[in-house]
Length: 146
Image (tube, rainbow, N blue to C red; front, top):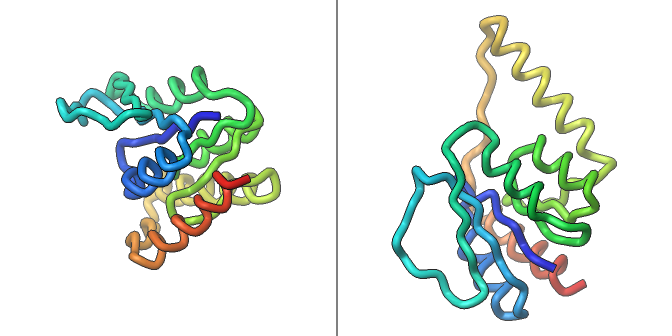
C-alpha cells in the first residue's frame, strides 16, 4: 500500500506524512514544477514533479496508483477515477469518497460549472478550519489502521 497525495493545494500533507511514516506506509507527493522545492523529504516520502498543465498530477497519480492504495485529493474527477481503480480516496476535510457519494459530488460540480458559464456567481469552498484538520486526522488514522 502507498499513499498518493494530490499535493499542490493539500493542507494536510504534514498530517499524512507524520501518521504514514509512523506506520511505515510510503507517501508519494505529486505536485507541479511550479511548486518545486530543494527541501529533502524524510525517509519514506517521495516527491514527483509534473508539468503545470491541467490534470497533469491527476494523470500521474492514476498511472502509479494500484488497487488498495490511498489517494488524498479534493478533485472529484480524480476521486472518481481512483474509486474505479479500487483505491481508497480521501478528501482533506475528513471524509471518504465512495461509490455512493461520488455521483452527487460530480453532479454538483457540473451544475456549478454550468451556472458559472452562464454568468452566475457561485460560492467557493468554505475555508479550511482547525476542526476540518482534526476531522481529517481522526478519519485518516482509522483508514490506515485497517
